[in-house]
Length: 146
Image 1 (spheres, one colour):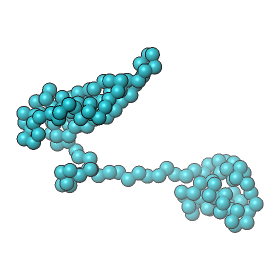
Image 2: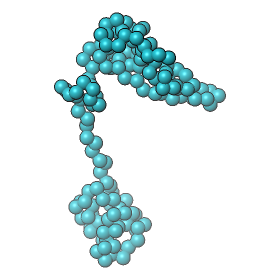
Image 3: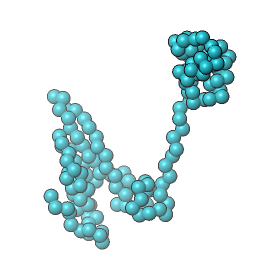
């Protein structure tokens, strides 16, 4: 039976011990799940981890595409993330850093107990005005109404 388990796992590398147990039962082996699981571990059989597809960076794609862009120069691509922490008394503290992807400089960081959607929209505008980006931008030159 162990030999058949090994053959089945080589034929179907994404099958685990439960599916191999089902295949063995279909072939007429009278065996329970626990035994198959024990023998599976003793033989050192494992399901290989799934290889994830790597996302390609947008080269010549749409300006508004949803693919990641590689920063070509300072102030080209900014990103933000949310970081959570707890204070000593157990209360939550939320942080939202805005980072320039080219220089890896933290342009602004919003620290609050609660960050609203308006805060998310306003923080990059504060970073823009603090770093002088608005003067160089030909698009929108005023912050959204708060």
